[in-house]
Length: 346
DNA sequence: GATTCGTGGGT
DNA sequence: TACCCAAGAAT
Image (tube, rainbow, N blue to C red; front, side, top):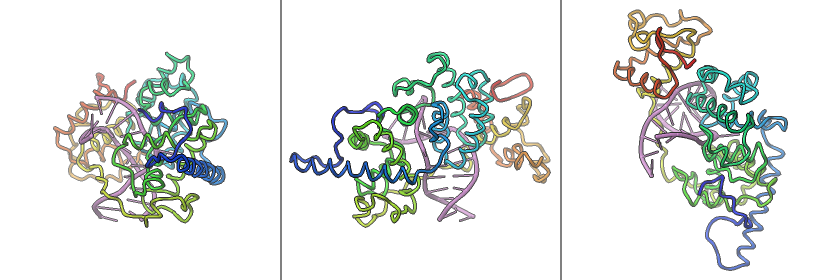
């Protein structure tokens, strides 16, 4: 069962142990409905003023924001999103450009394959939906780079549909509020999805505000570290607070970074992004003598950051790893080879 | 189900 | 400083 498609028609029921006693169920239903109202009231008053929440924002603008926000903080998305929507106000306008333009204007948001997939999604929207962002969960899910979360989020936030949205914020809020745990399981479980489905308000308009409100609570109050429980509108109902805010039962393992292929790939893409012509393979794979000997990086052009070339060669990556990283980028379509060398897809 | 895939600000 | 981790998706 996927989060977005699973919108049971029956009445919303609270999570946790199911009692066979009708009066217990009724009591839980009333408690959950109370949470619906309190949480959405709080959201109406405390919601951040984000441009993709503007009533005038197009479904395309909302879809773009959701893709950019995958694993990337709001503050870093904001400026890139504005430039992107100004440049490409519709799926057709983006689809008309080479995919490399999307990668270039993705900037340093990270995970540049998202830019590639967003470009592919725009092309699919043009080819299969007449240029209009589709409104149903299943149609959205079929687009490149749109998974269960984003499909449900766009259907809910852009089209006002009743879909169960489950993101990392919502998972954490549910884990604390109803599960009494500091953090959700390492990966989304069937039980979590079931709980989220049962918690979704029956009323469609309310379900949209519930989705956005729970997500917002997790983003600004019920944060992973140092949650602001004093500012929480549902603190009195929180199982985690009631349990004395016990520590996490496991330690999330951080992603390795230094020395990884991802680091090298990122450095290579940064070079290609800043280049206005194909870059010879040798300049990517072999460290220039002056840079290798520790040339003054500050001599790089001031508006080009610390110097993408210097950053790449500063990694001192083994030749084998440089080769592997470049091969991967070419295979992924993030780069292409031409006569003069390597460039973003044109 | 476990891995891979970027980046930079906060603590 | 080193580590955490942020509106996930694809394989």
